[in-house]
Length: 147
Length: 166
Image (cartoon, rainbow over all chains, first blue to last red; front, side, top):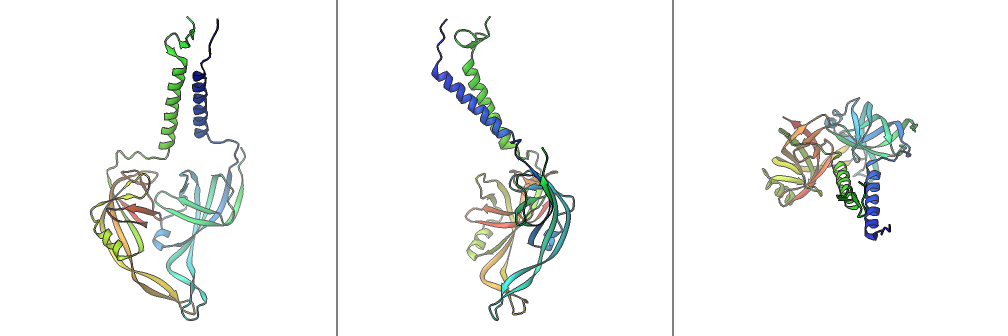
């Protein structure tokens, strides 16, 4: 018996296959990409004393942009913020302590990172009710996670 | 009975190609639904009053006056979603200040001649769960976040500095 193949049907089947493949790609994370775990110190500059009271040790952190869990706060230190200002007397730049501004030094245990953090890497992290952005100033431990 | 007959119909009833198309549409809708709702929070049971404070820094009097005209009016997020952020319930205004330094680095506080810092109190219906505090429109409120918003005839942005849920 002779069977005719309809070209429209073939195109529809190909389109269906493409849609299913695209859906599978979107839903599944690439499994061959390495992930990194790191313990870093994140410096968050010039926050108010009220803000500094909010983050707590043990807080679970979420990546602010991707909304995925990335780790937790291990410890918190604060220091007075200083800023470079121009002196009105001689025009030279002087370092001045800012009133009611503190730099937070957050030690973070991070996991499932797509990129290994370096000194200078910017991170925006959020807890349950707060968000803060800063830069990595120290890497305590870092490595690729075994698959 | 053949599984697929000579006309390409499954059990002689449904065209295989039509079935594939229907399945593909269902999969596509499912993919869209799963991706679109993966980070959304169900706020259908939102019944708490969320009061939060937003500090808007160094704006001119025209913006201050426009904000004052929006007391008891709703504001929406300046984004594609235009999420309802609540109603402005109170406004306080003070002259914006900055710092200059002496030769020794001592700070001298100085007022801007025509700039104002505005503190907005915003009330919204919302909820608090283990993930955070949300308005009824699904906007998560975070202290330290700068939100950009639109009122009746003014738009500006400010930092969320306080959140209370009752």
